[in-house]
Length: 249
Ligand code: MG
Image (cartoon, rainbow, N blue to C red; front, side, top):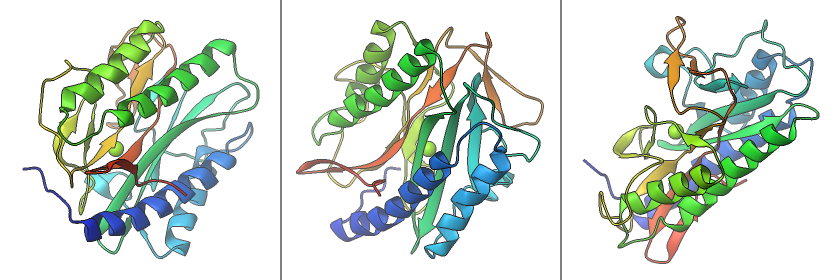
């Protein structure tokens, strides 16, 4: 069931989103060679708690941290660890969420650790740009497939591939609501977009094949071919005045 939000609820989600965005920015600024992913995670968690919010991810389905931190060929759901030290040239995806006054903000971005290769930079740029292209299609009267197909075309035209097994999602009082928001699709198909829908749009884009594999830790998802993956996400409200990005600092 898709839960439509009132303008008041969207405002409340904007407060949660602002905290999530601030936590993501603070954590991203900490990404540099020599730093552990546990340290990056701690910075996100401290930011969230300092702003009176709850780290949404911590304990979610048993996840042990406030953020997922996924490096290079890790697509999503990497578990922060003091033993995982960021290396020069890594690309580091951070996904974090905040629950504030009962509403969730969810966002992600991929950060460069020092100098990265031109190909890694192009993957990150394309993934980020595809998110904003997708957000432009989050308009009342459109269809869910307009968002996914736009992201898919943008990335595939540039030689990258779209992960199929994981998608964006509705978001509100809980992190995962209906509908699923795939990063692929057919224009004009899928759920009708209505004012009051709040969705997390989150392209997960691979340098090589689209296929993924799950690590035995039960969480970390990697690319099947060991090539790079990038991930960007915003929580977005669909309104009669167009899309509003809720996860802004
Ligand atoms: Mg999400």
